[in-house]
Amino acid sequence: MTMLIRGGTLVSTDRTFIADILIDGGKIIAIDESDGSEIRNPDTGRRRTPPEVETIDASGKLIFPGGVDPHVHLDLPMFDTVSSDDHYSGTKAAAFGGTTTVLDFVSFDHPTLGESVEAWHQKAEKAAVDYSAHMNLTRFNEKIAAEIPYLLEMGISTLKVFTAYNGRLRLEDGNIFKALRVARENGMLVMLHAENGDVIDILVAEALAAGHTSPEWHAKTRPAWGAVESALRAFALAATADAPLYLVHMNTAGEVDMLKYGRERGLKVMGETCPQYLFFTEDDLRRPDGAKWICSPPMRSAADNARLSEGVADGTIQTIGTDHCPFFQDGTQPILYEGKMIAIPGKELGKDDFTKIPNGLPGVEDRLPVLWTSGVGSGKLTANQFVALTSTNPARIFGLYPRKGALLPGSDADIVIWDPHRKARHGVAQSHQRTDYNLYEGWELCGMPEKVFLRGQLIVDGDKWLGKAGMGEFLPRMPGAPVL
Ligand code: URP
Ligand code: ZN
Ligand code: ZN
Image 1 (spheres, rainbow, N blue to C red):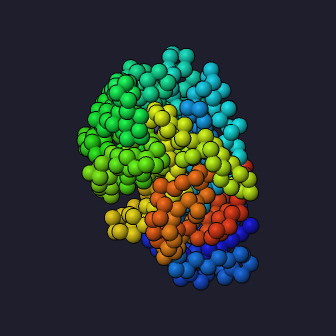
Image 2 (spheres, rainbow, N blue to C red; image 1 turned 60 degrees about the vertical axis):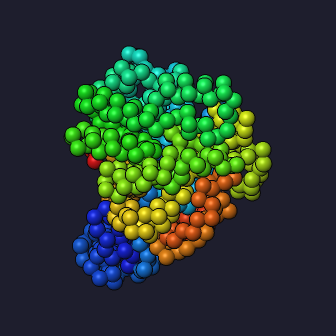
Image 3 (cartoon, rainbow, N blue to C red; image 1 turned 120 degrees about the vertical axis):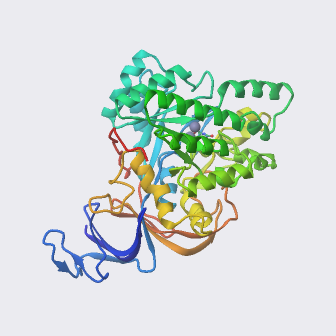
């Protein structure tokens, strides 16, 4: 079906301009910035007034490419439970927040990488927006190394490695170095979870032995210095392997300093932070409901929030993802979700022991409205930076551009009509994330999606959900994506 979005103000990474967007077959086929009253026929080049197409008036509204969230965990088994958004509920929530592409993670919990990817596909096929995944490389030997290039045949071009979670997810430095080399040879990108697993294990054992069981000990036992030194350590490994590296969920000022240091020396290193690390601190873990803020790496200090915001604004940090990995605050109490009562064990599992609190937070739906209000609304970010951080840069870094992250002829018609003046008090009652709390409860937000299109189909219209489970497409990704 042909459709015209008329008179909106398009925002790209470097321009803001009024134009009409002509959509056909799920793609943008023309952008016309002549005068808003006519559009060219793409075949003949002649102007035509298009009464024959469905027209949506977007005058007075902003138009963004659909958000690309580079970091979500849907249906992720953790401890004795599973993250409470699956590939349908999490992607529906994403769409309500203006995000039309999500990048999930494949757990390496089958004998081979290939079997793990297959198992992930079975879970992911109910996604309601487009999706891909990074491979968690949590075991390593020569056989696994030899299988890595075959991930590309499955459309997966990124690997996540961990310097923490000893005995579970961590790779030794030598194996991270070998993985970086394999990635470099095959045009793949390694992503790093930076914390010091050895130090964490010692501090956790000491804390438990001393009877410390409350949520604040989660942060106290995962010190910022571990994040800083392991980020620099991995940058050094990447430099030696001449490979690119992407630092996920940056949470502390020292990581920003290390990223700046590496980039100034020409290393191919990039970074991502998440909204929670810009706004919350270790103090939140001391609240009576502190378990709600438990994630790894943990919240830090107000000075860390400020330095991360600075790194976002000055371009040291390339993307803002969410690390969306929600759990119920109280999974013994069902909530109503799409007409059914649902309860999934959550943070209450660790009420007597902080090490048993499932790690992770909701956020995929909150990302754009919260960042718009706090960043663009306060003058700290331009609208163009907002689009770069939340859509175009992740699309480029992860090999999806210009299909995603762009409003260009030939791009998928993933389009957000954004009302910069719409105000709302945010919270769990407004949210579509399948959990019983919202980190931004009571925040006054200004600016949110009005309509969201996925490949030309209207999936969110104000408060109405028009999308469906399974309408998301898997996005195979190519090697050799750029280093920004
Ligand atoms: O607490 C978090 N972030 N859970 C998800 C797993 C990870 O390391 O990103
Ligand atoms: Zn991580
Ligand atoms: Zn994560």
